[in-house]
Amino acid sequence: MDITRLAFTGEGIGSENGKTYFVAKTVPGDRIRFEKLVEKKKFGRGKILELLQASPQRIAPRCKYFDTCGGCHLQHIEPSWLKDEKINQLEQTFARLGPGHVKVLPIIEAEAWNYRNRLLYHRNDQAQGYRSVHTREILDIETCEIATLELNEAWSLVREKLRLFSATDIPKVFLRSTHDRTLLSFSITDLSIVPKLQKTFQSISQTYWIYYSIIEQDSYQNHGNEFFPLFDEPKTIFHQIGDIKYLSYPQSFSQVNSKMAEIMMNHLISSIQNLTKQKEAPSILDLYCGSGFFTLPLAKKGYTTLGIELDRWAIESAQATTKTLGLGDRARWRVGKADRLLKKLVAEKEKFSICVLDPPRKGLEKSMFEWFQSLGIQDLFYISCSPPTLARDMVHMKNHGYNLQSVQPFEMFPQTYHIETLTHFQLDKNH
Image (cartoon, rainbow, N blue to C red):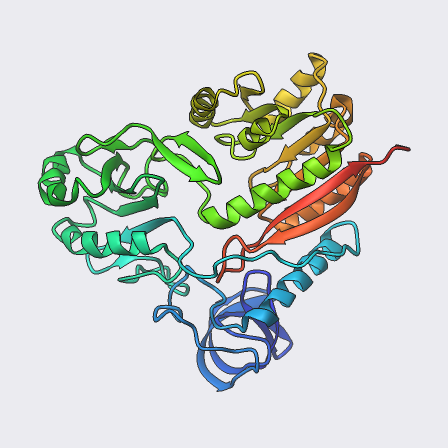
């Protein structure tokens, strides 16, 4: 079968007997022999068995696990061709699902390797690592090419010691680089193993912060809702991006690519400053603000901000960082669902000139769009990790009077098909 194009998921697409097949780890221009794994009415999925003819865009992957690991999708594709292809896919997605033709700006890039600052490894009694792209079985991983050097060093020390514990007792291990040191957390199913954990990892307790969380054996939870210190680890930690040290909890969400997150943050701030340099500093609403990743640097630049977030722990972290930075007069916080709080802000006659949006993958609730104009919002900056839902929301924005100004993609997750975008919308003065 000939692979003719690349799917948004990073799989190659080909056709056999009139039916479309998606095959991971292939490149447009490849000719392959493949095994059919999934058969649906209109399409199927398979895995490559033999490369009969290689695409001119195919390169040798850097990672020895690439052919089987599901963590990376695109190490086998020539980077400059792939950069253009990602732009093309974004534009096609917006044309197919969104408002029509949209010109996308060139991708902003940073380090392509050793950027990821948090990892989740799965365990069974034979292997410890990531899941296979084809079978979802766990692969035994010694080192990860996209993880930071600090995380790889920590994993090399920990993985052998973990073999003293069954996968039933410790099904998952979480690693995270922080401002101060590397953090480890063991997801355990039985509190009775804590003394054994302490004995086993005492020797590295001065080098790493070590926690445990409690999950059910068959839990799909990432790593547990709360981390407990194994020794005398702090209950809160710092995660630094740019010149701000964000206080957070060990289990809280953090940007996986600190360098690119800083680049995106600076780009957003610069865009807002260019809009407002001839005006008095406006009030900014930050929806889905997390621990204040955008809110706090904007407040530090002199803007009056309100951050809204559903996660109470994230808001507690943001409030603590606000106090540390002395920004209490410029950064306010509210906990709750964004759509409900927008309606409440309108009732309270709050006004904002600019709104920053960083919603989950599902995008914005349809009910939210009607409130933006009522709040006085002239410009919206929408951060998205899901082009299909962004395309849908572009249409809603246009229908509610906001014209698309620009789409700036960022290579936040190199070697994967994921891509982050910052999209600027501006209110039509005649609407």
